[in-house]
Image (cartoon, rainbow, N blue to C red; front, side, top):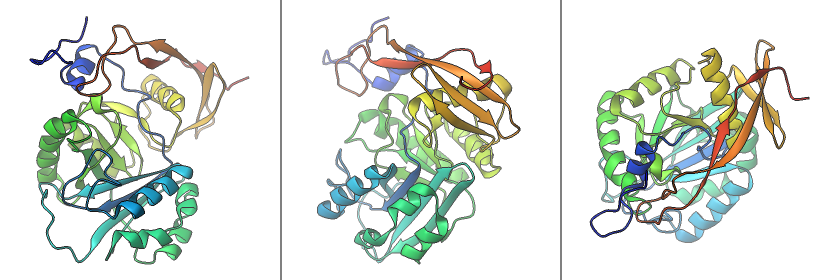
Length: 313
């Protein structure tokens, strides 16, 4: 099957092709052991850290600093609020996704540039006390939150499909749902990240997202539309999802990615069980676009083989 062009002759919605081609979602989450998001309403450009009403010098430098320690930085805004009202404070959320050190902090700052003092290395290693010491306005948040990509300047699918998801989910879980600038994987829209776990899901409906949020509140991971947990490498994500599907394990921190080599990934259970999961790369056939309006190409797709009992040799 070849992706059909739109009325202009260019490739159409990338998310439509992804669904029609049954592209696997596992292994497509971003890689980040921690997350930092700050409220910044108003317009967002494709590169929101430097193309919004956020100070671009601060935004670019802070984004770079986060990347160096495997922390994801992004902007958020309340559902439906696309203008920029006068703001006295900006909400801030900081999350660690590492099993055993999974937590979510929230607070406010008068100006986003106050985040310059945040100890990003402590975020990366999951040291909650050190993070709070660096920015005392932060405090533990009770319960999970959801980020939904709605940035149409980044990709049309995110605005077209993400905003209805935000609107519907916000009615079910008010105060826990935020629009986000960019979560990666436009072709899986609507896509969302659930914090503090760092689990990412795609092709969501309001009902599915609500179920995933309820599971997150119980300390569980839902398999519906699961792209992976950002804690792990993309190959690790594929392997962890494969083991979860094999044994039906839903407990968030029951599994860890213990190691990997060029051929396989080791996944371990808290009860001592271990699996070796072959992970290979295949060329997508037929070619498909990874973003709206782009030409199809033969992208690479990760695939998991059958998990084998036992650790890597």
